[in-house]
Image (tube, rainbow, N blue to C red):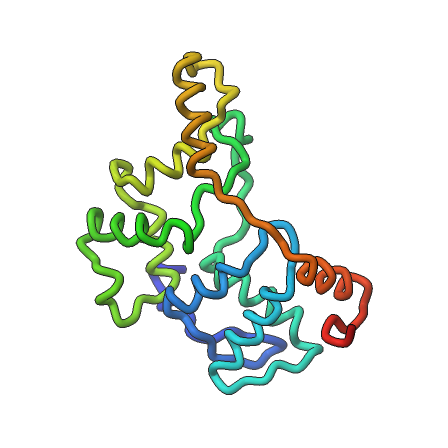
Length: 199
């Protein structure tokens, strides 16, 4: 629990503690490769990298458990909660933000909300960074861009003019991702139980 215990700097995998990188920059680097729908080559290499930078070479049989623990860490130790449907919340299924695309907006939002210059911060634990990010001032441009991306255009409370405006803003700010054929082949090999590095 974030208020009563210090955030973790290592993860327990099969009863053994492994140190990991916990600065927000390292976690963002890992998260940048995360695909919300499926694992890919970059995710796997990032998991190995997150552990290997601390001198650990992960055994293959520990990989899935290590991945699960690392994703628990990325989620700040929170359990998945049930929430109201998107239609009740008035949002769509679009991704609200991307660390790479919105880096400048996030930087600016931290300055405006907390007077924290992320360039000057030598270290900030990912859980602390994430808690601050979740409570960014609603008047920041970053918050407004997230609203543009996620507002439900089927909302009956929106006028025709508002729908037209939000539709244009969603088109402008939309986050798009394209997987290369190499990444798709890598995923397929893994799912079929083949070694993806021996093609």
